[in-house]
Length: 465
Image 1 (cartoon, rainbow, N blue to C red):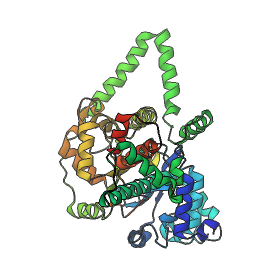
Image 2 (spheres, rainbow, N blue to C red):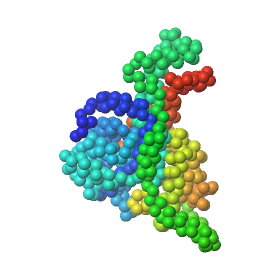
Image 3 (tube, helix red, strand yellow):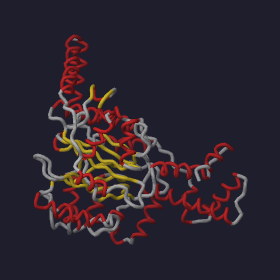
Image 4 (cartoon, rainbow, N blue to C red):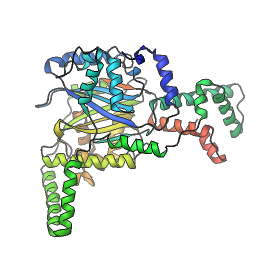
């Protein structure tokens, strides 16, 4: 066991809050560990997951509260589908590298890892004395996302927790002054009183320091991390294909035009063969999924979905290309909290598993499932359809649903989404009471506490309290 295991929960919490509070430059890792489960082990695994769900942060198998870099995690068991056995998906969204985090998981879980993954073929059961074996097995089953989104870009878990505590302390200070009749009318005096509250409280002293600015070295480090954080296998067929197309365009433009026309005709033909979806959602399955949603004390929900990719090599290549484009947009454009206009996603990602035959989607989001799907339909139907139009049972559309059809067919899309889900039995959040809007606002509150603000900026800052 590592020295980290000997720390009490409160001491460990204080360590990661203080260390992470002034970072703000974190590179996140977003990934899953995906493994098949033997049929004879499924029932026992369901019992283990149910036991973990009663105390996600402190359960004896894998106490997620003892993983100091972890933002969100989930364990979802998908039942056997066709030729595929039951599949256990372990999702993690963390600060830093996958290797460092999995080393923490193996050390913290100890023998508990056997209870979770012991029914998976090839798992090194009984390797409690050598957590390195467990770590290597988990690493071997890591699936990188084809595309992923991070809502609170650059913020460590410690920073998010600490800034939420800062807001709470400032709000309490304001309330106490108002109740005692000591709240001044002058905005400058109000902020000065809050500054004094922070200055003289050792637990909040970190907030005096300004947020750091990313240096050139930090930027290079971040770019290197991002370059290896997603599945880029689409580049393997794409690079020679684009090179061939460029060469044909220069030397034989008619041949290049014919190649492009063939691709367009193929897409038109395969989309025209998509059958309508009229299947209902199984009532018992829906009840089990809904039982895991809207947990007391949490403003966040979780979605785990697994669909078949339509059986065509062209479809697999196409969905890889679409995910590559979406991931590029997420890394360059959608870095301020929103994904395609949706402001409620903390972490989400798509992954291709089983050699591209199945598409996995996991998301940690704010609010209800209905409102989340409505946001997708109203604000991001084109991007959503471009991905899932390559999946079986998705509502029919044309040209990947970029202009019509697909997710815009609200009810069929929602039915398909529900049928593809499995209950998220185990869901962990390091800050369950914080919406993404809260997280972003807390950072701005901290930023403005000691910043030079003009009268208008000061008024706007006070409105955040």
